[in-house]
Length: 247
Image (tube, rainbow, N blue to C red):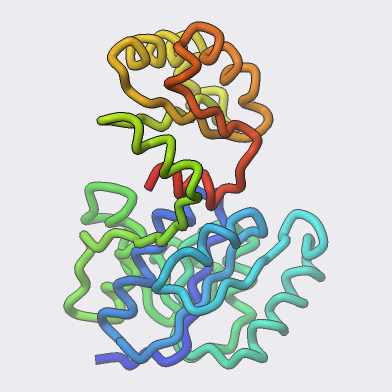
């Protein structure tokens, strides 16, 4: 069995993909308990990945700003090579991520077989999975025989006292996140407002979460509901605090 000592997982996609990928760190820790796991992510994902107990270090890669372009990739590769990783797990398939992986000097570099420009030493086929959580674990099957692709990620998010106080007032509490950066993933402000109104009438506590961009939707929900049932955190809390509310 391969012994992983110092591994780097590269997942510089959007936040949801990064959270899904944290099952890789958990499974690596199970398969190689003494391993040190680092994650390379976009700056906006650093805070939430730091809440994963299976990740030892989080390294930001500001690929669209201060570390953009070919020079940025080369500089980041130099920085990573100085950390002497023995295993690279490439989960992001962009040309940038593959180029970065190809510059890394780790003796083991694993990903999907279609990542033809990443300089992989081992690869797994992109098949045999039934959900995104399982897919992100497939590359590990090229390194280990007994991979549990059903492993789920773990996050330990602190819950602020004011959230605990609010939820304690209700038999059930529902968190509503009406926004998305993708228009096609939005259910609709009026639908969320209608849902929140029905829940409020049933005595359910409602926590609204999201960025400042979701404030108009949150205000609309507040306007038609019993205000005693709503805690509006939209634009007021960090990502980690919002995660704590969900927890």
